[in-house]
Length: 217
Length: 241
Image 1 (cartoon, each protein chain N blue to C red):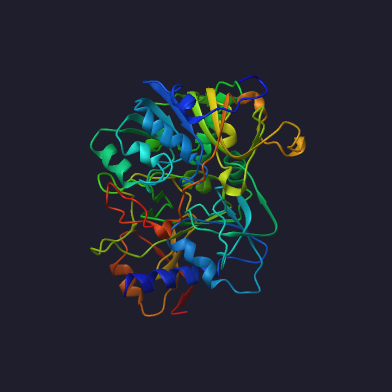
Image 2: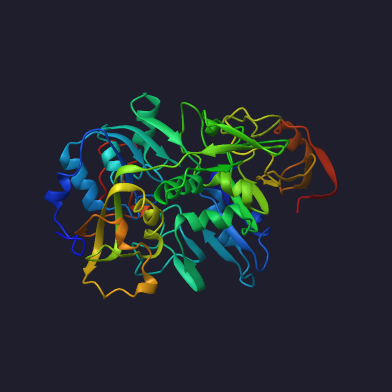
């Protein structure tokens, strides 16, 4: 499967985790594609850590230079939305006001450890707001392609990359599968086009199979 | 220049910068980083011992332009991913980068700006971001001590300033600016609009003028959206016109 297709499939599946009335924070990368797949009947408030609650879609014209999302793209604000400074933005994050945080990941361990801030010697994006989202959000969903480009699994026994936050990920969505993590890593869904064997062959971590496993949904 | 008229010009600002200073800058991904003051800093030729701000900007936007000149010894920021040059300099050992979680970083600046001595948190505990921060045990829980941050000079971008330095911000260009404004000995504000005292609604003032030393009129901001980003790998990257 093409990387781009995988990203869209992951974003679409992640959109079904967003329920009416939620306060949602989306990370950069695959999570930023999630709003494209939200059902029109769902009303949520997106929080952006650069200081918006109630962030609206990309403006069709007249983009305002002083109004962007956390990745720097122009956005709008919805009725009832507000602007605030960075201290308030993270105050609400740490305090538990965000219902769901959807973050991109580089690796997730079977205990739910998240690694998403640095590949030593290669990429140095930095930790940004991920540690605080992982700490404060009521639910943390990690999105990533199932494997590295060279085929190495990203769902691992123990993270080899520096950890962002330990034991914080509640759900992992890849193009192959959906896992939940509570006491243990549990396979919840097999995505269309893949088999249980595919998942076993491409997952380093040990996992159990949910009694409610949904194959090829 | 008086307490009630802090408006000055860029040449005067240039003379305030000095080698070895610690510099705080407002902004988030370049949005809300005062472009005229950054250019002024670049022209000054000054070397900065420590830069403190949310991120490393882009190579051609925000603090990124200055970082590319290799005149900063160290940087405290939450991420540097939008400025590949900063990453290269870090890897080559030419720029010492301390990462701080984004909201923790702004609270450290706030702590410095409001005369407090830092705070405790469990965020980052057990990770590389613990560095050599003191660990303090209270009851049976362990917390990291986060120290306050202050600077010699703060560079701030505001939508409006009155001549006393009362500040109003605009949308997401506010970000870290209100706290950066409070945390240095000398706070310099670049304002899109400068108005007489009495023009701003006191209820809407975000930063009271007491924190501000100097105000200059903005020549317009230059941050571009990232889809206008030129070749990311190019060190002398300039946005396409």
